[in-house]
Length: 229
Image (cartoon, rainbow, N blue to C red; front, side, top):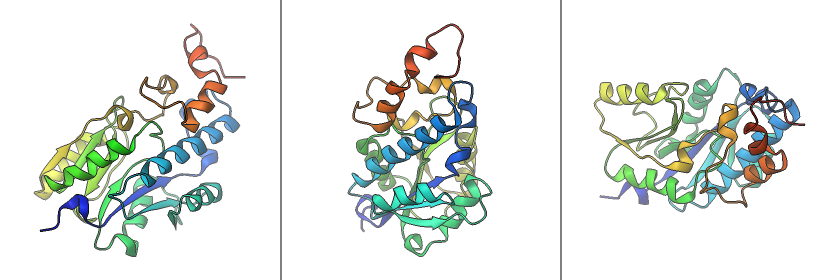
């Protein structure tokens, strides 16, 4: 029997319109800065995914032209998010793509720039032991990775507190579910406090370079948080 981590696996990355990304960061970042951050995070996520040999390819589902161009630079297949009705509707469009009709899937958000290839490999490898694998977000109860041996094992329901919902869906569908916890993979950027990057993050990441340029760490350490100049 072929092991899951030697099989045909595709990554799926949903990306909303960059101009609407990260609204919760508006107290500390301008609209232009939030767009720059969204691009940097997507770049770092795609770079990590392309370094995972267990993946056959990457699907980026988006209605944003700039995000689609960046995805193409990494050789990702772009699925047009026609409805633009949220992450879970976008994922349903990607899961209907022919590339994943007989493949395992690894769904990750575009705002986990500190993820490492080794962490992603650990999630895919865990498919050898369970048909569904989850990685929780470290701060809000969300899900930062959902891997399935087949695309139809359950319907993704990303968002706040989705980690518990995904576990419940796995149980109700009768499928075993494994959990992989990882520092970089667990750290998404949604709120101002998330802009403090983990010690393990590489200084070569575009996200780290941008946040350093924006003086994010120094500003967040101030008693009164104000928008970065």
